[in-house]
Every structure is written in C-alpha cells, then in structure tokens.
Length: 127
Image (cartoon, rainbow, N blue to C red; front, side, top):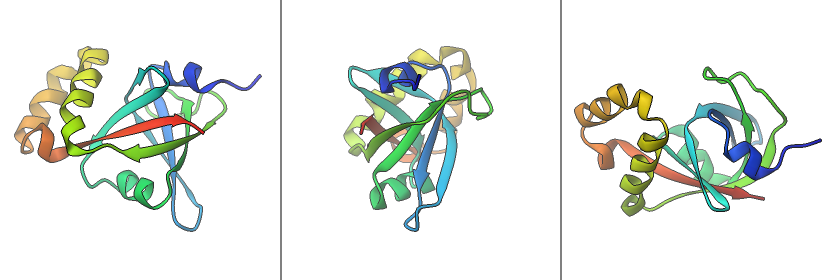
C-alpha cells in the first residue's frame, strides 16, 4: 500500500525530489518538520532546490536513510519557498526536532553569516 503524505512527513529523514525545467528528478536528503497538513524544511539560501521550486513547484517526498537511500515509495507534493520572515521560525523548529545535530548545525550557520542570511525555508504540502 502506498504511503500517505502525513506518514512520510513524520519520517526522521526525508528525500525531497525537485524537478528541472526539462523534468529530470534531483533528489536531496533533507530534515523536515511536519506542521499540520504541511512539511517545513530548512535549506541553504540560493540552493538549486529553491531555484527549481521557483520554476517547478512539483516535488516528491519519501522516507530515506540518514545518507539519502530511499526507504519507501515517493509521494507527490507541491512546494513553495517561504518568505524570509519565516526562516527563523522554520530553522528553530528543525533544530528542536534534530537537537542531537544542533551542536554543529547552529554554530555552522552563525559562522557562515547568520541564520537569516545563509538559510531559507520551504513549505511542502500534499498534491
């Protein structure tokens, strides 16, 4: 039986697949936090996945291992880049969920120029 969006969104590790303009899939392992009917993700500002989402909001999410190996079937979804004002809220939610990695994640963000300058937030919802 195919997994639901909610089931996949609750996974510890997620594989977010964005698509190029010509339809080629580009999978990336990400950290995400379920929020109601959506999933929020923090990523590097200006990353290719944010650029691809601007061009093509269609994405898939699926369960994966810590290094990105798929662990289930993909679920179709739609993504959008959130405004910069949402970055800190999403960043804090991700740090709360993945607190055992925060010992390097937070200082790394600060050294690179600050949370709001080096990160952006993505919201994903079921298609």
